[in-house]
Image 1 (cartoon, rainbow, N blue to C red):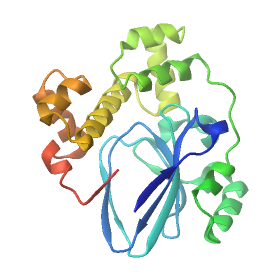
Image 2 (cartoon, one colour):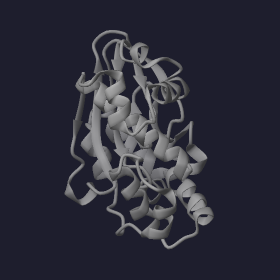
Image 3 (cartoon, rainbow, N blue to C red):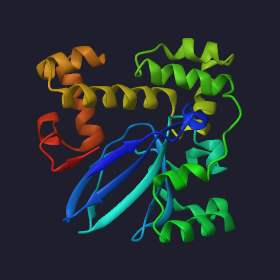
Image 4 (cartoon, helix red, strand yellow):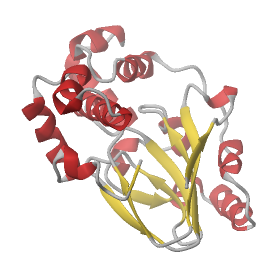
Length: 234
């Protein structure tokens, strides 16, 4: 039902994947915080930009529905969206509000049945990441297990200045982004089914299982076992 494909070599540093979700029946679909921003299209939603999520959102997908999207890596969406991701955090916005006529033309093409690669084809490869984006990349590669003061120093900034710039580029403060990246890693470990919850907590960098459970409650509203019993998850 859910398939990811590459956006191509020119975009791989900025774009995590293109994706398609098809729902033959009415489906409850859960999307958890991952630090990413997406451009999403469906006939029901239209063409929208989806900001970084700070808590799980659940969507009821129609029978026979098809949704496509392109997912930007944390901190990499700003050159494409043309606005700071900070204003989109926890929200969505019509892409037309950001791109104008270009978004209207793209939506007409998607209405004709083009797939997610058409979204990637509409993106212009950005310049090489600046020091702030490279510091955010290091945070992502470390899955949030990184000293934020060190990341700030790699960007050539004070901790306070880096906090502001990370918020502008990713929509999240460095601390919040690291927590979400650690949570995302825990979810990936849980899906792999190894080690039990105590092992997941340890491998993901939590102090203990109780620490893991607190983050699950904040980001999903439920305990880990309840989260992974849901019908559809990404």
